Amino acid sequence: MKTFPRIDSRRRLAVLGLIALLVSGLPLAAAQSGQEAAEPRAPQVDTEPAPAQGDPVLVRLGERVERLSDIEWRFDVAMRSFAAGQGVPYTDEIAAQLRGLLPNYLEQRGTELVLLREADIRGFTPDEESVQQTLAGLKASVPEGEYESALAEAGFPAETNLVQIIREADLITQVLEALRAESAPSDEEIRVRYLADLGQYTVPETFCARHILVADEALATELVERAQAGEDFATLAAENGTDGTAANGGDLGCFQRGMMVSDFENAVVAATVGEVTGPVQTQFGYHALVVYDHRPQQVRPFEEVQEDVAASVAADAASAAMAGLLRGSGLVTYPERLPAP
Image 1 (tube, rainbow, N blue to C red):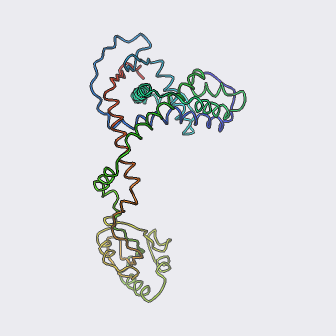
Image 2 (tube, helix red, strand yellow):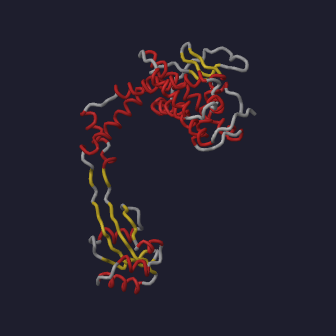
Image 3 (tube, rainbow, N blue to C red):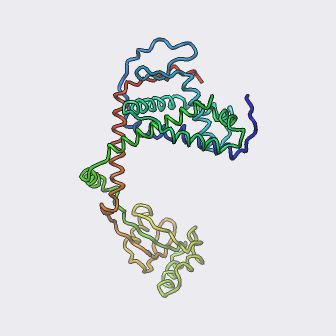
């Protein structure tokens, strides 16, 4: 096993965390943008000849291929970054456990290649100033003289591989932003979606209540009468309640229909806000009850949720566009050629 100069663990994790954002964040977001809509992918004809011994082709997109060696160093970087993000040392045991994600990563890499080809078709180029700023920021995060060892520990064969990842992430971001911009919905589309998804923007009826649970009906009746006479309900609950809410003055918080047993719910619904009622019998015992707030069901107005609805419509449209790119790409992956665990 290789050893490297010791770097302060928090500084090391910080640098690996930054790399994790580059390696896993943007490409993963890209994959998620179209993965659901893109499945199942249209069948592809496998025209690839027998794989090269020891380094088979795993991804083919037109004339571009990536072999096992290309995929494995990227996967290693991604998994090391993931472990660092979780604060977990990247041991041989952890590496073996994460190895099962390799087929999923292969599909993700295929999605990235489709997006990178789209960037080329659109004439996008990496923002080199931003690339160099990102690289400089990574270097500045590591103590002087320890950058190379941190890079190796992160799984990069060389700095050129890190720069390649940064440039690809920049191009993928440009494509995703272009797809979102092209998917901006019209006012009519937003309003139609609002009406179609009205249930999502409906706030259900809500009740907020306190109770005092006791085992004896006579005691429950006495407590109801004392509260009705003006004694503080929360104090009575703290002194007499037999369930966990007693320590909180009997406060049950706020709840919707269907969340309480039926006898208790019926009493809550029938109660007048602010008036002590009971006793109410349930399978748990006898309850003194006071509803301190009741909010009727209401639909959030269109103007209040318009931005959220627009974002939902745009996300769906961008996902559909992404799915179209994948379906028409001719992308072929060969998970069966992955080495056995």
